[in-house]
Image 1 (cartoon, rainbow, N blue to C red):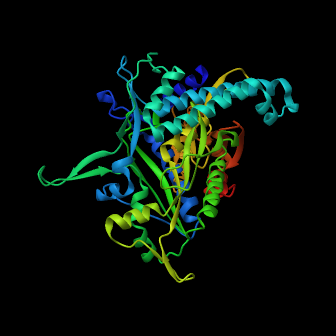
Image 2 (cartoon, one colour):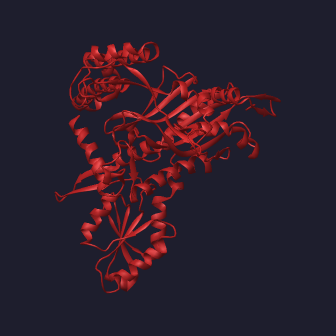
Length: 512
């Protein structure tokens, strides 16, 4: 566990030192759980968003985009259930005065049991080698069986308590001996529900102002525009509407860096289907979304599905794609079969029909919806944390390298004149001028070239192009590959093709 904590601290430190993420309003000592994306972070975030958009919208003829407003009519959130039911179960520690999500405390306890089981499995795997049968070991080893069965029992009791009686959740916390993570105190209050929506006002005076909310999710903007998009785009079911954008939740227990924030960005797609066909499309999107994640090459072992046994009131199937963050497996993306709940709720509260006329069936109906929803900030953290690596080289030296998928890297290539004279900077600038039309490229002339290589490694730049005196003679340069540190001598005219081959979205998405 200590090692995981150290890795996570390195991630947070590296993100700030190399211009990816800064604490918001840091000159005023910051704002809890709010962060600013810095010069390199904004590029990485944009590239992740574009990679998602390309795969969801541009590569699917029956999916279109939308950018709905953050502010919506307040009845929207009454219809969606957020006014009455968008709550977190919170518990206070009487000694430390700290507030926590009660379910998170229990889930973290259960995850520790899972990690204990995984340690036993890894030890056995190392001991038995190729002869190791994981499935057999998990079902027969008494210690592993005990850990995993205890974990399942705890999560089942948590789910029941969250539905039936929150005092059962408090009793479970006390029974397990769960302590305040910061102080070790076990002196807890009762568990209470807390609404997560941020309120605001619309109007010139306090007397006439209308109460509004900052949207807690982007999906409702899609649902209220369902007919507008369908009719103006002449869309035929099945079809989807995709959207990326900011959402806001007054998270009382916001932690783990950008994993849980009060202002965050979602990438969502709502797919409208015929009633009765939703499960076919639910399984289709489960498989398709996992393939998208795997296309980035972050390691198949870092992903797993978590199928929900306890479903939200609007769903008839739900699953999470969980990712192995430095603090364990946590939700990265949700795939939900939302039935016709949302459109029918907006029909009821607005008094307007939100139905589709199906010419093949010659009937009107309210479509069912399959949702895919991934947190852009969580996706950023998954990519960044997994890519940050410490390597020991053959000569015994060490390097910090950010092995970002090249398609997502903020800067695709850095051009480095070997020295700052003899016309080498001028040639380097000319290369920059040529490449910048197609790629985000950087110029770096400060320090020895080896130090510049290390700096670009830490920034995640896939290529370094070094201009030296031989360049003056034959118009060739040295191109260095970040991951292998291999160096090739190539013609300047070949650079665009080499970079394009490594960073092209087409080449990466074709892996799906």
